Image 1: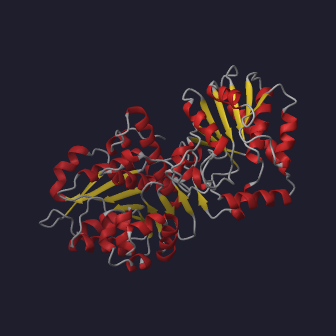
Image 2 (image 1 turned 135 degrees about the horizontal axis):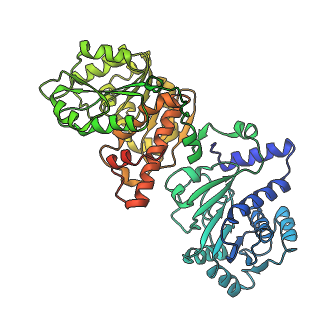
Image 3 (image 1 turned 30 degrees about the vertical axis):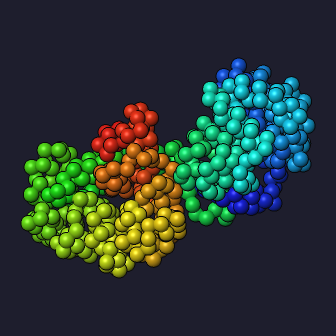
Amino acid sequence: MLVLTAENIKMAEESAVKNGCNYYDLMKTAGTECADVISLEDKNSKVTVLCGKGRNGGDGLVIAGRLWQNGFRNVFVVLAGGMPTDELCIQMYEEMVKYPVVVTDFTTDRKTAVYHIETADIIADALFGIGFRGELSGNYLEAVEIANKNTTAKKYAIDIPSGLSADGIYNEKTYFISDETLTMIAFKPVHVIKPSSDMCGKVTVIDIGIKEEILFPFAEKYTAFTKEEALNSINKRTYDCHKGTFANVLTICGSRNMTGCVYLCNQAAVEIGAGLVTAAFPECIYNTVTAKLNEPLMLPLKNNDEGRMTTDAKTLLPAIKRADVIAIGCGLGVDNDTKELVSFVINNYKGILILDADALNCVAKNTEILKNAECDIVITPHPGEMTRLTDKCIQDIQNNRMQTALDFANEYGVTILLKGANTVIADKTGRCYINTTGNPSMARGGSGDVLTGLIAGLISQTEDTFTAVCTGAFIHGMTADNIVKKYGPLAATPTRIINELYL
């Protein structure tokens, strides 16, 4: 799903009108489709629609009329700022009052307006849309505050929860607290960029008839997945498939002091559907690893006195040549031996290579090796690792996550997954994906090892490497979100994510 800024949405609408649409039909379709979603609720519910004076208010007026058409008989409109002033909104008001919908003007009958908000079973917020800037004030602020105090009502925001900026600028002030946001045409940054995205509730994109070919020229190559898009990105298995169909994955992970990452990375690759997984690890942890892992093949490698792997070329090279995907770095440790090992793999591999964790630290002072590689490289840094790769401070990286990822992907010809709240994935063609799933419960050691294994296992099951990385991030976060809902706010441990993968 494309992500468009407020300005780009306006330009896309103008282009659609030039290509045969009209604003009246777009508004009617928007309100009608939103009402049809709300109509899945109990028709005996009392519905109060909060309407502004502009075009978002026009959507709300269409919603009120359509709800009556759909069988709701307790429909109330509260005009928070008085009568409509936008020409199109006025037209929608004149059409809506043909139905026996009760209309109350907050500016002249505050008591009745407050009553209808406080006693509603469903509240639809159509006060402000993508043009909103600043903070709520006056009657709008009061209406939203009263709506938020009605904790028993199901709340829908139309396009944007009033009080928030469409472009995702964080607002600590009052905003409409929605259970679900029904947004027109495409995601806006507010729907995908944390923490604002958490304030939108569930986000449903409403198709109002503007074709994607009209939208695309105004999109900045930013995308996000819906759940359906993420799950549909995984290829369906045919009856005659076999383990060779779904990639030979080689992981090179672990050291004496970091053994758990071998299990987490490899088991994640197995659970997500990799055809064959081979675990390479230092021979000094053989007993520990084999006690935990059953499905993967075992490839113990020679280690140094510190328990870290060395470049055991005789053993490793045949496995490298067989592998379709290699993931290296989880728990590897950093010393001269592991730096040599990482360089050896990069220089001798021509498939798809995922560099995670200590593999990134091993190349941090030698990033030119990425440019010269013959393999297709994916890197998965967290902000701290990104500082070592770029010499930028963490604050600069966090303030410009999308551009930082795009610039690095373009300069080094890699696919990059920049971890954090709103994981960003970019590739050398300029594609940029913003992940919308995940929660603070994942902020613990081992989460990244699971993600690396998921991506490795998905690469042969999706359209291309970029899609595999995006899908892995989405499923990783979505599983953690489901776990938190099921067990509590600290429950999304790496092992539980593996055991409860949502597919």
